[in-house]
Image (cartoon, rainbow, N blue to C red; front, side):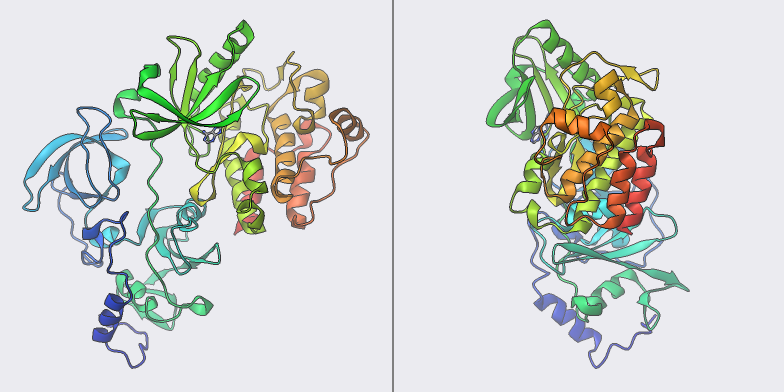
Length: 490
Ligand code: ADE
């Protein structure tokens, strides 16, 4: 079917030539060669599940003897599905099985139709999309097509421009695809090819497909899924990342190949050990894409190690104060605040309290991906209010009823989230400037609340103030905060 769009004077031949000239045909290291421009985007009839060929979108190095190493672009038949690790046969060029082994299934994608296009990213929400598109490897014009997770939005074309993402809904009706009614195409591939040579609103033409960020592994290897205790010898310490009250943190390597963060318990009096074990217990049970994953612990000798996923850009407080962080616009700041609210909503729904939510305890990686860390103080609760005797309280972040009466709850976490919003929109400023921690508490009890940081949008300041309502029950839940922040983004 021909496109309904007026493609000006250029015929299809010229369109193809221009594509080849644009440099897009040069494969990026991270991109599967075979995936580029392969397949017919309008193909519909697929083979049966057993004979469906999958393609690796990233390379993978086996961490164990029965795992299979592979390169981006390798093809597979699936032998056994289930959970995060599947058994697959790797195919040679003639389709024979070369080797069989265990593979992480989220590294693979069905090798059919437009799903194999380098710009097609499948089901993905706006935040994940930003975390891919806004990495430094992508230039302006980098783009991807995704299925929006928001109901009724369908497919979206997302394009990077000036460290922001612009999103265009792709309409699909009567077998035609279009962004504007006046310019329709019979396939998604045609639509994309058109905008690779014709300007898209004020953005110019589409550039290179977005570079795919490797998914973060949920575990070090399939053998460590249920195995929390690992030998210390598997880990090497690289540089020191920070030093806290209970522990020092290092970047390290597992089996000389996988980056991890290693938290080393400082000394071994009973309090610290208790805290250490509580942290492990909390981390083990809490799994969410906006929470730091625990990989393993090493407790067969002292000092104890906690091994977690590594986040390249370090903690949010330092990041906001850095050159890169201090140039972020408020839209991106709201994106980050939303991610923290998302992680905290999960904690709230898991009946868990953080008790030390602050920018220093949020970690950042490529694409402004944020994860809540440090559940050292978290407790699982049966009652909604947990009464604490702990005196090591971060005053400026903690709700008055928690400081005074030890009444920690999800609503005291909400208070801390308000302070965290203040930190975010002031680019990492220390709250209650000019006051010491006792003064901050006294002023707060008298009804004082911090003014809005200069770049803070009025709507965000309203949200911040609602987190600081005197009565805990008058404060919003994290679920509601997440929804309110989502509205600020869209
Ligand atoms: N600092 C503390 N924990 C960290 C982690 N997991 N990744 C990077 N920096 C950290």
